[in-house]
Each structure stands twice: as structure tokens, then as C-alpha cells.
Image 1 (cartoon, rainbow, N blue to C red):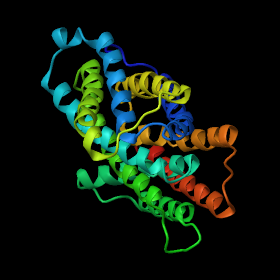
Image 2: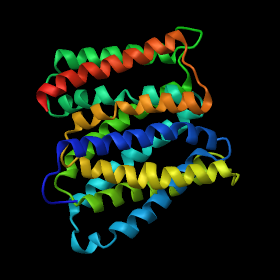
Image 3: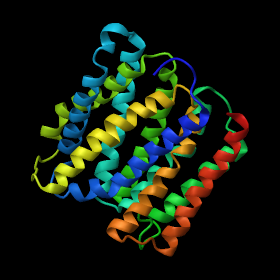
Length: 292
């Protein structure tokens, strides 16, 4: 994973692949959550992914050990698991398509938070992008009452904030830390947090249906082990802003999958909200093409 810098198109295509994997798993996870408690599902998912990554990168703890990989992995892993908890709980109370679009709010939030962390005033276009995306999220979240925003929508919105910080942290450590160690540590940290909380934070239940087995296999191996390894590698060569921009495809994949598999159709208000979210993302992308 080190050596000559890869072509930019390869890095971008790798991140697009990650966005696709994450987007198509929303429906799979939502269906599985009827048969398994949320934290238990996430704990098993992260534990299986940790085992897979340890088998692949375990030797790098001997040959390429460095403290930045450990420290960065723990911080990124804590943020990552927290984001997944918020998103997965939210998914129980809102639709898969809305979850995908609201999660996409982290895309314009990345350059905004990056500006705040580095004490740089956000550009006007970045502010416009965030405001536009927020209005779109509000339209998608509102049900019958303009003052009513569902619990699931709020949880997913909080998840978007956490995901934005996860991308920033991973971007800070990916360039100098061993990518294998960084990938293993962030997933292992999530598994440890899950193991310490799932048995008391909510009622535990699981029915070993085919849907649960399929969801665990796909999410642990592909949406966790593979996806976050690719993201860790790609962020060595891509800025946090550009990574977030490419991940704007995730809600598109989520809605498309939700439509094909579950037949979910957005209302006119929801469609307008979705378009505004994508418009906000596009505003940030146009600014980033001149800065990255």
C-alpha cells in the first residue's frame, strides 16, 4: 500500500466503489434489524471484520509498527462506531432512502469543519452549500407537521456530523501511519466498544434468519473490512474534502437500491429535499475543484 503514488483516477474509482458498497447496504441492514438488536449486530459485524483484517495485516504490527497508526486507529474507530450506532438506530425509525440522503450531509460538513479546525473562515460557496443541504434535510425529515422531525432523522443527522470528523481524523493520520495497522485498529476499536455496551445498553435479541446471516456477511467483509481498508489507503492520496465529495454518490446508490429492492418512492417534498442536498454537495464540489 506504499510506494509510487497511484493515478488519481484509480484513487477516485476506489472511493466510488466504497460509496457503492455503503449505498447498497442500507436496505439490507434495515431488513436485518427486525431480527437482531442494533448494538449486537454492529458488534458482530465489527468483530468479524476485525478477524478478517487481522488475518491480512497482522504481520504489519511486527514489521511496520508505529504509534500514529495505533493512536489514529483508536480515535477514528471510536468516531466510526459512534457514527454507525447513530445511523443504525436511526435506520430503525426512518426509511433507507432518507437515511442515505441525510447521512450525505457529512459531505458539505467536511470542508466546513476542516475550516474551523484549521481556523480558516469558510468560503461563501461552502456556507451556501451547507445551508442548501440543511434545508434539503429538513424537507426530507418533515412529516405532516412542519415542527415535527422524526427521531430517526435526528439520529442520522448526528451520525453525519460524526462521520465528517471521522474523515478528517483519517485524513490526518492516513499519510503518515501504517495503513494496515490503521485499518485494523479502527475496526478493532469499534468491536471493543460494541462488546462492552451491547449487553446492557439495549435489550438483546437475535434470530438467526437468512437475512441476518446475509447482512452480517456483506457488511462485515465488504462494507467494513474491505471498504474501510480502501478508504484508509485512498485517503493517503486524496484530501478529506475530495473524499467527501466522491462519497456524495453514496445517497444516490442508497436511493436507487431502496427503489429497486423495497419500492420506496420519495414524496414531492422529499424529492425536492433530496435535490437540495445534492445541490449543496455540488456547490462544495465546484469550490473544491479549484482548491484541491
